[in-house]
Length: 319
Ligand SMILES: NC(=O)c1ccc[n+]([C@@H]2O[C@H](COP(=O)([O-])OP(=O)(O)OC[C@H]3O[C@@H](n4cnc5c(N)ncnc54)[C@H](O)[C@@H]3O)[C@@H](O)[C@H]2O)c1
Image (cartoon, rainbow, N blue to C red; front, side, top):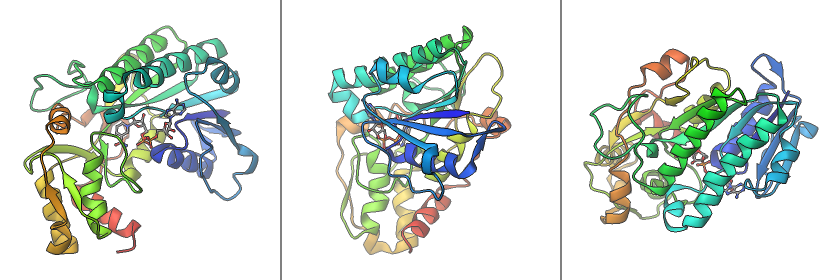
């Protein structure tokens, strides 16, 4: 069986590719090839990956590229390529081309291939917005308050319709914000949620653009990657194919307090509180907690608490 991973050079995509190559099988079938789609080839180093890793470099909105990579042998597609929230908000054309046209054309390529692949779509909590109930569940209406959230919601609807028609077997996983994301800040509105931990631990000041009482919903990189891979194997039943993945609910103030306790007050003091109304307006529309009972029953993994997320990052950076 061949697997296609879009956005494979990104933070989560590269980890999903590495996890698939290490496993060697998915859905009880041997993985013959992992075909990656991104603007650059992913930097994945897995012993023995060799010819099983096939990079296709190009644009996710290019139908010819998609027809070349999705074929009769494609059993599973992980669709992670996206323009992230902050960038989609300011560059409307780019967001629409990548997040809407790219997703629609990928699903059309799957339809034309005719192998009814499983499609795991990396969706987001940003599909929610407006007046939310205290706990959001899988049937809370999608009412996005950002362009990115709207584009993810469109992707979910297209995935559901292609599933209903038997063109694909779709699963839309609504990921919490992933924290602590290694590397440089990105253009997601949520980027500061990793920055306020990662940068101070590297001795670099960081700005927190929302008030300390802001409640957020986070997951570790490890559980995100495990749950994306599990998304190809779980049984979500026949109708609702969108699922809120498990996360931990914590306030930004509690995050910085945990940093002070783990690394010392002088590290936490590197966080400057400078409200940014534009970021605050996006972040406050995201649910701070979702009902995870359906996800846990389906077999998705949950982190224990923010302390675990912080401890995992401290281990990663050798502290
Ligand atoms: N990281 C998070 O906190 C988080 C939370 C919720 C949802 N998600 C979703 O998970 C997915 C992966 O997130 P990530 O953090 O790894 O993002 P990322 O920005 O690190 O990776 C996205 C990848 O998509 C690629 N891409 C963008 N435009 C492209 C194009 N035109 N053609 C081909 N490839 C293109 C980029 O080159 C990049 O490698 C995304 O769909 C994102 O929306 C992430």
